[in-house]
Length: 333
Image (tube, rainbow, N blue to C red; front, side, top):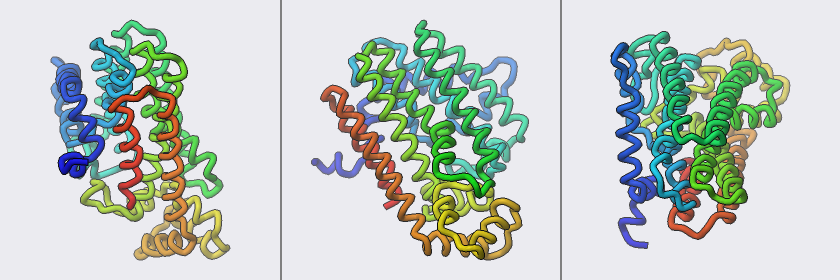
């Protein structure tokens, strides 16, 4: 391994491999987010899109298409569609969560207002639907439209499940598969479909995206309790303050005695949080080894993602996708 390879991250190497296509995606993002009639739309969209996200989801679409031998231009349309769906969900999420920070910057709802964030998110969803029909593939349209519905369904399920101590790991997985993994798996699957890949390869791409997305969200939930806020762009303990019952807490609640359960009822279910509660929550997570168990789950899902790739042809991109699965969980080391 040469020094350049060793010092760059796998998503950066994938971005370098896909440089020409990614440039076209960025150009299309900026041209399609414009609005002659409502200048606030590109202002709000640019605030989030230009904030330095990794473009991981659109890269997965381009990577899948490239690995399956696609030589057309519609992978760019689909990658842009995926990024618009993702950006729309972020704009809506920040309103729902009353978030103040995203990618290290003030959120759009803080910079403008909730109404602007919701309506611009709606606009981007509409733009995504305009773009996903352009390749002329009903199957692509079905995959991406189903993913959009699944994402919304997962978000609504989270509303009812997030503050209910009866939420178990099965319900948590349904939420994660909806709100996060659905777009990862759609991003990889449509790359194979647009390339007319054999069905076993399309299925493998779906399985890779699904497992990668689950692993990605579990890591995000773990980083909320033990991450570096300068690296994550979020404040430590945001999920606790927002009363989100994520996997580390679900694991701790499952082992809680009566006194500990009463603490979780007060802070999560009833939302009566006091000074020092976050520190006490962290002490309970450590006591029950909930963070370590969550990390093991993330590693297991990353391993599933890598296993799925074995059905795909030998290709430089395939190795990069293996390394991306490792990188997603390396964030918690």
